[in-house]
Image (tube, rainbow over all chains, first blue to last red; front, side, top):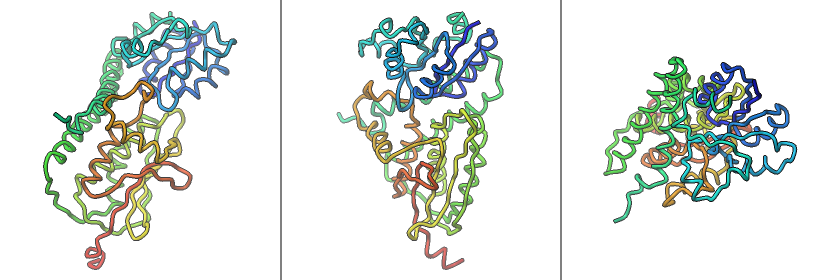
Length: 120
Length: 225
């Protein structure tokens, strides 16, 4: 069992992900914005963060850069789980490893079972 | 050849996003065996496509829209009733507040679609973490009838609305503007209102942010009353 923080702006989708992960006996928190998520990391102390990049106001990349600047949070794994295509990030030359990302999942191709397996 | 405004890339990006999320939700609900909201999600997506087709139909030529007397407060109640299930799924209550009963002359269906998209735009911005309320307000303002949609959860400025409008003028949505915003709904509302000679504006009421538009009341109808 691990502590997982889902950062997902769509509340209906978040509910589905949360139910699936709770069913796998994880303790799950949820934030809808990058700003909320920074507070949630401090309070909830997750082992893993599942992050959508496409978010209002401050997007997931901004969250990642802010998150990676805190040395206390170095051991927290980040799983990108987004609707944005990988080709977009290649054009932006984003280096996931440099930002502490251990896995990239393209949302439309990821089932709940696949998400459960990835965080297991 | 110049690309028609309606099919520019930014709008297509937005439509793709607006349809991908409900389709993904349906896929995951089927996987989870939770089919309780499938009807709601599919109807909402079909309505979005219908609204896009309607805007396209109106912007293709010179539409002839028959005007009829409309009580905005009643229209507001109808919208609140229609969107309550959509709002409940986001942990939001819709509260119509009517401070004006003067009738206006407008094309009912176009106005209904515009207002409903304004409300859906605000509802889509809701974070749904805690219960909140979206207020549909009908009031008098400077001799006009003002319809406004406000939420305590949404923080909007005229700059935000201007940026949303600009998204449709850009040849491609830049990565720095990657954002989840109800652009398609607001685009539909903005286009339909402009066809009716009205303007969508950002507005603040009782410290709540949102959108509003004003109509001129029909003096003929007011006299008859």
